[in-house]
Picture 1 (cartoon, one colour):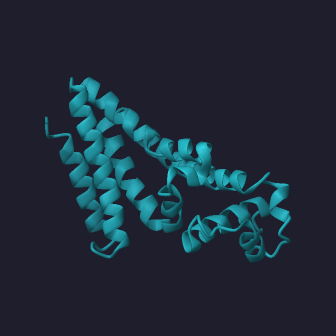
Picture 2 (picture 1 turned 60 degrees about the horizontal axis):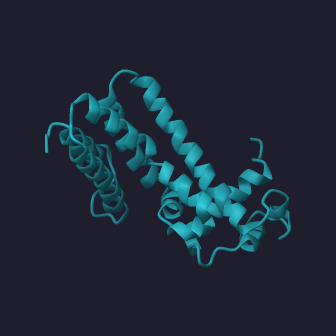
Length: 189
């Protein structure tokens, strides 16, 4: 098996390092050492620590966008199903990649302005789909806002419950997430 290019290895290790040490203790030097390269090597790819962090966030964003587009292609004409499946898959994405979740949940300043915008874009498609669905169903702006809030709360809450072991991470319990998101569209308020 061919080894990943160094830039990709640095990003992967950077994600792991943030997950282990947090952003406040994040060190490009530690990442370089874990990749077996000099402390100067990362700077061939990243201008500084902030650029490195932005690349980490962008890496996660790209992976999530690819997953979303796969669902959109599978359900081209069913907004509700797209929203439900993207929501459940986002829970999977967060639980199966706990270090990604650590990066995503960083405070806004930690990833820089660019990182903040990218992290916000992770839920952007879901918000757009909910808005589109709500317009088609003649829901008010307030109902749309409420549905967006509830669905995002279901996603985040489920990921935390799975992560803390309060809910076993399995297909049966992912069905609860699916049911909860789907049910939200049956409620008119």
